[in-house]
Length: 87
Image (cartoon, rainbow, N blue to C red):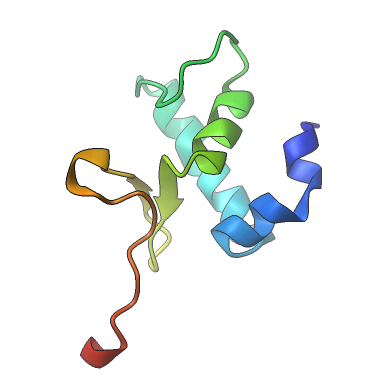
C-alpha cells in the first residue's frame, strides 16, 4: 500500500475513507478508459497517479459523489465552497 494512504491527511482532504475509496475507484476507471493523467509522473502505477492528483487538488468528488477535474483556467482549485444563502 502507498504511504500516502496510511496518513489521515488525505482522508480528511476528501471527507472520509468512503469518499476517498469512491474517488480513487472512479478516477482509476477514467484513466483505464483513456483519460490522460493530470500529473506528470514517471510510473505505470495508476494508483500512484491518482493519489498525486488528489494531493495536488486536481480531482475531487462533488456532493453527489460525481468525479470532477479541477479547472485551473477558471480558478477552481478544488471542490466548490457551499453558499449557505442558497440552501
